Length: 59
Image (cartoon, rainbow, N blue to C red):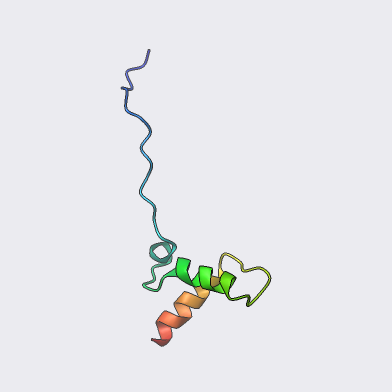
């Protein structure tokens, strides 16, 4: 038996997509609004990141 202990699996802290992209604007919220607003049938994963970066740059 290997002495690994009885510790249960600890879930890693979630990292926001904004912090992954190095942005202040909320990528998750922008993605939700793009989907909810019926701007397109499908919204890619990179679209809200790009839009958040543009909005942050302009503000």
